[in-house]
Length: 251
Image (cartoon, rainbow, N blue to C red):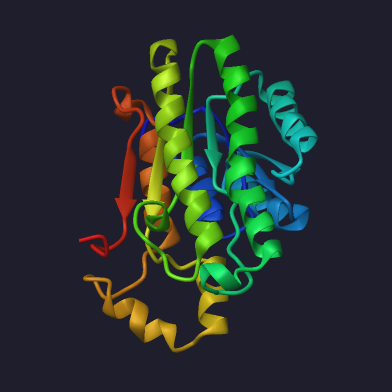
C-alpha cells in the first residue's frame, strides 16, 4: 500500500475498526494521529504504534464538539505540517433497539450527533485544510445499514445513509481539486457495536450469522485493509465510491 509518510487522522481510533486501521496505516509507514473521545485508549494505541517503530500522536476529540474537531486538525498540522488523509470512523449505536414509533429521543439525538453531525464537522474542517494544500483524501466509515434497511435501528440507519450521501455529494464537489472522498460499508463486524448488540440480545448471534453467506463476522483488520487501500496512491482515479465488506450479506 502506498501510504508511506502520509499524515493520517483516524477518529474513534481507540478500539475496534479505528484501532485496526491506525495500526495498519502505521505498518505501511504512515504517521498516525490517533483520535478518540477516550484519551487513555488513544494513548495505548499510539504507544503500540511507537513501540513497533512507527510515529503517532494521540489526541482526545469529541467529534460532536466543533471546537474540539478544529483543535484536532490544527494540532495535526502544527505537528506534521499537513493533513493527507482523514478517516471518519467514530460512531455509536442506539442503547435500545426499538421500532420507529417507540424510538427514544435520546438515542436519536446522540447517534445522529456522533455518526452524522460528527462526520460533517470532520469533513468540513479537513476539507478546508486540504483545499489550502490542493490535495487530500477522506475515507468515511459508513455501514451496510447505510445501504439497506436495518430493523429497529432508525438513528443508526439514518446516520449511515447520510454518510453515504455526504460522501458522494462532497466527492462530486471536490473532484477537480485533487481531493478524493470515498466510504467503506462494513457488514456485521467484530467490534464494540456488535458486542453491545449481542450482549443485549445473545440470541442474535445465530440469527446474524445465518444471513451472512460466509457464515462469520468480518474482522476489523479486513475493514482496515480497504480503508488503507482507498487512502493509498493505488486508487488515484477513485472517488465518490462505497465499498461494501459484508461477507456477501447484501447479496
